[in-house]
Amino acid sequence: MSLYEKGATASESAEMMQAKGYRRTEAACGLRRRKLAKDESGPARPKVERKRSPNRSLEELMADQAQRFKEKEARHKQKRGWRIDMPDDGPYGLMVFGDPHVDDDGCDIEHLAYCLEWANSRDRVHAVNVGDLTNNWVGRLGRLYAHQHTTDDEGEELMRWLVSAAPWLWIILGNHDKWGPLAGAICRDADVLGVSHGAKFHIWSGENCVKVDCRHTHKGHSQYTPNFAQVKQNYRGSDCDVIIAGHTHTSAVTQIRNGVADQISLCIRVGAFKRYDEYADQLGFDDESLGPAALVVIRPDRQGADRAVCFHDLDAGEAFLDAMVNQWQSE
Image (cartoon, rainbow, N blue to C red; front, top):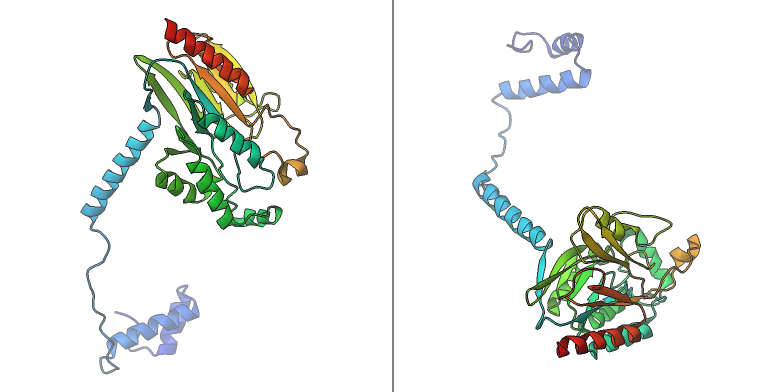
C-alpha cells in the first residue's frame, strides 16, 4: 500500500519519497499516476484498438531467414568456382579491361573505344572488366562532380554504352559500382554477368580447366610491387592459373610458382583508362601503368609456365595467339 493510500498528504508523501532517494519530479509523477488510478470519477480514457501486428510471425520470420541464408550461401559458393564452358579446347585470349571510369574527364575514351572494337573483331578473344565503370560519386565524395563535366545522368548513359559495347565474359563490380545499385541493374538489363567485388572462374575447354581469380582488388599492398596483393594469393596457396585485379590504376605482371602447392600463377595488376585525376595529382602519384588493357593468351591443354602469357602490346599478343591457334589446328 502506497503512502498516499495510507492517508498521507501529497506533499508529505513526496517528502518521504525524496528521503528514500527519489528525485522530486519522479516523486510527483508517481503520486500523480497513483491518484489518477485511484480516482475512478475522473475523465474516461480513450480505448485504443489493438490489431494484429503486420509483422511476420516468429515462425514465418525464422523460415524466411533460413531461406535467405541458403540463397546467400549458394551465391558465395558459386563465386568460388563460376563455371564457363568454351566451345572448343583450343587457345583463346582474355582481353582484360582496367578501370574505365568512363564519365571522368581523365578517361581516355577514344582508346577505350578502340580497345572494345579491337576485342570485338577477334574471334577467339573474350573481354572481361575489373570494375569501376563510372565514378558514381556518393555522399561527401559528391563534391568531386565539380572536377568533371559529365552529370550523373550522363554517366549512366555512358555506362549503358560501355556494358552493351562488347559481349563481356564477365564484369566485376568495383567499389565505385557498389556505391549504388545502378551498375548491377544495367548489367542485368544487358544480360551481362556482373559479379560484386570478384570471383573465381573455372573456364572449361573440353576436359581442361583453367582457373582465373578475377577481383577488383585483393587484400595486400606494397609500395615496391604494384601487384603484391595478387602475388600474395599465390603465396597463400591459390590454385588459380591467372590472378587478375585493377583498382590502383597501376600495372605489374609476375609469374611465380608456389613450391608447396606446386602451382604456377600469372599475377596481373592492370592499369586504368582513367589516366588523370585530381586525387593522383594532389598526392603526386607517378604513372606506374603499363597500359589500361592486357591480353592474356591461354593454352588450356598446357601445364606450367607457358599455359598463360600476358601481353600489353595487343598486336604482339594477337600474333602469338594466332600462332598458337595454328599450331593447335595442325595437331
